[in-house]
Image (cartoon, rainbow, N blue to C red):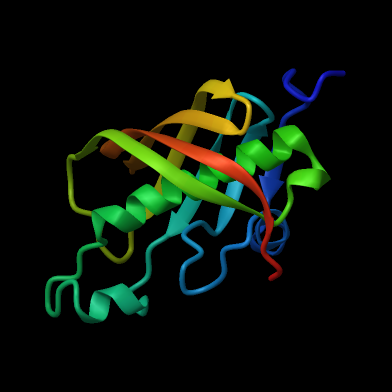
Length: 159
């Protein structure tokens, strides 16, 4: 089977496995688990937003709102899981660089207690460059969306 052909759906990837697949660590790991991963197609990242996260100390005191850039990071990390699930173990732990974010829209604030469902769908791939459309929902309501482009590098980052 070609590495770019869709493979069997992976129903659940937990936090431990996420950290084996991508180099992100707390406090910058923005997804808690990934469900319904279909290599070369898409997945859903799950992020449980909690009041004890560092960003809420300053964004904003007495009115905690998750910064949009962190929501975009959750989109990127979920997309990275799809890339690694597609390419296999040789892609694990490699650095991914953002190239662009297009048409980002934030439709509703995300607050502690919300659970983000980060749905990503691969739109294109050219070599090491991948493009994904992402839509983020809380309680089935779209709170953010956008298209991200990133490049998988040969650089390995140890965790």
